Structures are given as C-alpha cells and as structure tokens.
Length: 463
Image (cartoon, rainbow, N blue to C red; front, side):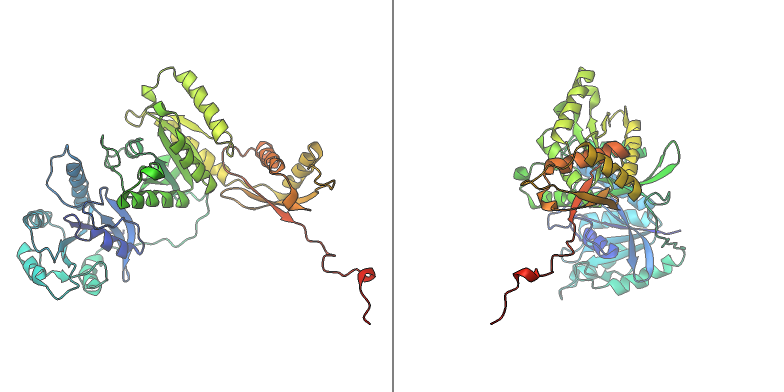
C-alpha cells in the first residue's frame, strides 16, 4: 500500500513549490502573495526511487471556523490526520515565529514522523536554520524548494519510514472503457455557481472549501471517486476548478493563473460539466465556456444549479433548451441537468448523463457502414456544383475517436461549401446515433495521378 506525505506550514513558506517539485509538474499555483493554496491537493509523487502520495495544504493560521481561514485550517487538520509522514516547513529567512512553535507542538502531539524543512536557505544567512532546533522536531534540513537544495538529505530522512510501506504501481496500459481507468470529469463555470458544493455532495464529504464568498477555489483540484452505475462501477476523477469571469474583468495576476489552471483542466478532461445558475439561464460567459470545451473536442454536459429557486420550471426549461439549440448548434441535443447542489435534488441524474456522452464521445463506426451511408446521403442531396463543375465525394473513413473524427476523400475539397459539410455531419449524427458530442469531418483532396505528367503536344521544340 502506498503512503501519504503531507506538507504543512505557515502561509507563503514554499509548500506548493515543494509539492510541484515532488510531483514533477507545475500543478499547484505559486505566487509571492500569501494564502494562494486553499483546498488540500493530493497527487502521486516521487523522491528518487520512493513513490508516494503528496498532499499540499493551505497555510496554517489561527481563525474561527466561520471565517474562510478557519475552514482552510480545518482542511489542513484533515491532511495531518490522513498523512503517514509530515514535512513541516518553515521560512528560514523570517526565522521562527510564535505560530511555528504552536503548530510544532500540535505535530509532536500527532505521534507521526515529522521532518523539519528550513526553506529558503539559498543564502549564507542560516540564523533561521539554527533557530529551528528549538521547535523540538529534530535536526532541520537546510532546504530550497525552488532550487532543489537539500533534496538528497530529505530522501535519506524519508527512506527509513518508506521502507515500512509496500508501494504498488500499475504500469498496465488501459483502454478507454477499461473499468480500472478513471473517467476524468472537469466541473467548470463562473464564480459562485456551486461547483465545489456539487462535488462535496457527490462524494458525500466536505472535501472542498465552500461558502458564500465568490472565488474561494483557486487551484484545479482532482479527487478520486467511485460511482455505482446501473451496469457497473465507474472510477471517476472529479476536477474542481476556479470560477471563470469575463476576460475584461480578470485583472489580478493570481486570478489569471487560476483561470489558466481551469483551462488546462478542460483540455485534459474527457467530459466537461458546465455549471451555471439556473436563474441566470446561460449568459454569454457560460456559452463561451461551453463553446471552448466543444472546440477542444470535449464531451459536454450542461448543469443548471439552484433549480429550487426557479419559478414556472416547465416553461423555463423549454426556454433553456431552445436557447441551447440556437446558440450551441455544433452539438445538438446537449444534455441539460437541472439540480440543486445544496439540497442534492436532481444530482442523481448527472452521472448517467456524463457516462452517456462519454460513450458517444468514444463512438466507432465501421468503414463499410460509413460508405453505405455516404452513398445514400450523396444520392439524397448531391454536393452543389461550383463554377459548373461537380464535386465528387468518393470515400469516407473514421480515423480516430474522442471525439469521433472522419476523413472524406473527394475532388476539389476546397470548393465544398461549409453548409454541405454541416449536412454531412448532421447526417452522421442521425444515422449512427451520435448526439451531443463534437464530430469532426475533414475533407481530403484526392490525388491526381496525371498531375506531374507533361502534355507532349505542349512541349516546345529546342532550336
């Protein structure tokens, strides 16, 4: 069984920088501003040949539970309880402060292995390093998370504890429908749409920070979860993302970083759940987010949250469907789920819709069936003649899935009108029952075998 390592410390001591170094990617947002990290984040990590799960946490602060800082502290306390080894990080430049001493006492009382890291020891001034001995946590490591100094010493201190755990790693390549492969689902939307509240309800745990304040979530947090479907259990990785406001309103560097992190979550997800407040009925920003996900080729599900606040629901839902059909025509039949993340009403309808579009997103069509369809589609509505010349489509094949992508070979592909291409795509949807997901159809020029031959009658005689 793999073990967990939690990185603990005051705000802005370098915890997220160390987290990124251990996982080998820039997953956690890093900035000079204190308090960037709010939710706890877990990810597989490696230190030499030692493999484990590392937990990044919010900075330890004293605050009442009703305040945001108090709820952040509560998440850190949970990380300490779950961890097998604790890396307690201090700022060697700032030296030991009263909160360091108080939190060191809490870690000693946890009876868990604690490794003390004196971060930011790049310079010659090591007064903060020597001062760390009075915390009573053993010899501190002179460390630099940014430059990688002290990593070898950290490895030597972790190794004796790591040997107590048996780490297992599965290197097997998994297909899209393999029951062991987690389905990646990103929950995106504007600030305060209820994304974190929805995930907490789905996993039946207060795992993510929520509250009345808009913009609480900053990092994109991935959570492992198991959904019991009617046919089989689905392992799922849910990604909570920061709220996305209009670009003109995003001024601060930290918010730009948070939005960028959310955009990366869309690119790496397989299904994108676009969440919006039902009372606002898909405003321009919601449509832009959905359009972005579709252009990236993701499967999309629309979620109207706070449905319990809507009056005349039947009339409102009809209006919502018409608006989606008009403004997102590239994916007709997009599923719309109406729910209340706070009360849980309608949440049970979300995952069936997610798995349904995921299966369609992976649709495969036999080449023989495609070409029978093509013959019928062209016979029913032939391509229009351009400049008095016919356009002949001779052959079609599917070249990939996720999303379904087709290539049709035809003469004068550049002259084929976009309207006819849309007709072919919609006909594919109808014939092979692939609604809602993006479908890509590329037109390939057919090679002319006589293109490089020279007409003998046009040769000029040499004098």
